[in-house]
Length: 239
Image (tube, rainbow, N blue to C red; front, side):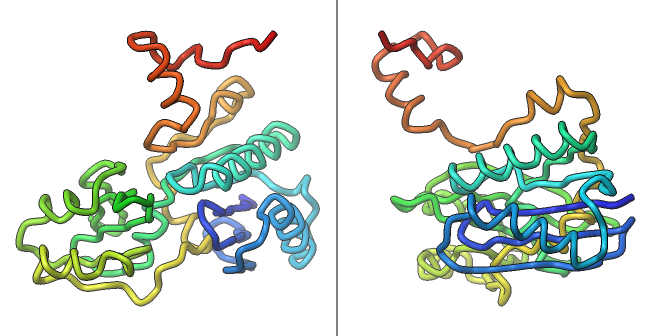
C-alpha cells in the first residue's frame, strides 16, 4: 500500500510518503508562504525522491480540520482531486489528533490546541489506549477560559498553539505540562488511520469536506440576515 499524506491546516506544511506502515520520506516547512503554491510541488518532489510515479499511489490521507479555512480548503480539494483522478482511497483525520500524536505518553490526558483568535481555541482531549490515539472529548471550538474546566486532577499535557494562553492554563490546571514539539508532522498520519472511514467511490469522495468546527463568516452573515432559515442554501444567485 503506497500512501501520500499531508497537512497544511495552519502555517506549517508537512508531506509524507509511506509504503505500508514504513515511512519513506517527509518534506516539511514552517514558513508563512502560500500553501496553494507549495503543496503540489512538495508532493511531486517527494514522489520523485522515492522513484515513484503518481499512478503508483494507492491512498491519500489528509488533515480534514480544524484549522485555517484556506489551508483546509486547499488540502481537502487537493486530496479529493488526487483520489478522483488516480482512483485512490481517501482518509481524513483530525488535525488536532495529529498534534496530539506528538505526545507519546500513555499516562496523561493530551489536549491539542489551535488558536482561533479572540481568546478562542480549537481543542480536543485525547489519550493513548492500547496503542491507539483515542478521542475522549470531541474536537470543538471553545473559549480558552472554558477549556481547563473539564480536565479534573489527572496529569495533562497541552500541545499546539498554547503559548499565548500559558498563564491561563497554568492558573486553572496546576498539573499542566506543555509539549516541546508543537507542530503537526505528516509522518504521524499513517498511525492515526485506525478506525477512520476509507472512502472508495466517487460520490463519497465528492461529499468529503473540511471540518471547520465553526461557521464561516459568510454562514454567520446569512444566519443574521435570515433567522430560522439555516445555512444549507445560503449561497444565493446574484443578478
